Amino acid sequence: MRKIMYYVHQSLDGFIEGPNGEFDWPVLGPELGAYSMSLAHRADTFLYGRTVWEMMASYWPHALSITPDEQHAIEFAPVWAKTPKLVLSRTLKSAPYDAEVIHDVEQLRAIKDLPGKDILLTGSASVAAALTERGLLDEYHVIVHPVVLGGGKPVYHPVAERLNLQLTDTRTFDNRTVLLRHDLT
Image 1: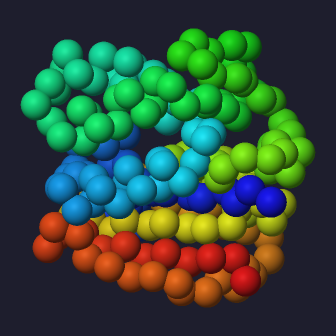
Image 2: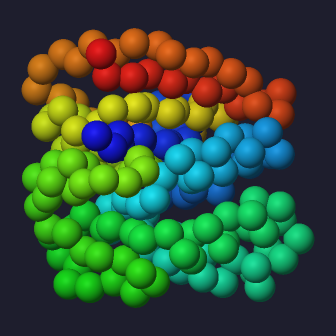
């Protein structure tokens, strides 16, 4: 069975965006960029919520013209372009760039049972919470950045019941960020 991996950047104080929605603080050095690419290569489907989808769709199709010398853009832009994408949204009717909109989180249960590589969920804390509630999220890849935002959108939403996870990996990247990887037990 395919796994759903949650890959998210958070501040030291537990937020995925600042008080005004800012997401200008994550720094993707070469080591973290390589880790990010390793997750992308494990997947044959990218999964987003509407907000993260809109951010990704506004940047990645044009990334090489916006940041032509940025190594991660050079490596990831073609992968993003060719990889099928799912957008979980109650409001979107359609999405461009080889994306399919799904409206019910339970549809992911059937998609997860299909043959193929893993599914990579990037950001999208509300989607992660919905998947966690239904036991559909298998791996949590949390990158902690050395910044305190003082408020904003939390990386985790409350869940109805306790969830026990197993710490399976910790690493530092670029002498700057820390990976905390937990798997569903």
